[in-house]
Image (tube, rainbow, N blue to C red):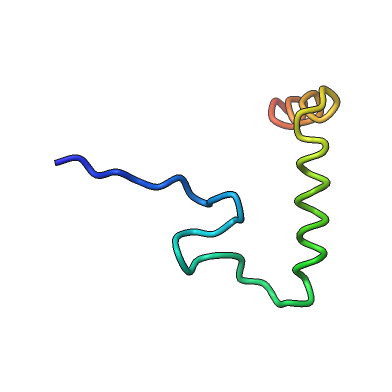
Length: 57
């Protein structure tokens, strides 16, 4: 018997029907800003180069 797994987290950051971020409401906007900044830089060559340097050192 094979078991299928859902992609988690979904596009809203939820783990299943009720799962999600467990952070105080005051931090939601700040966390969204951090997520947006990460999405902006994660595919840039400069980010990849720095990440590579950190991983090998």
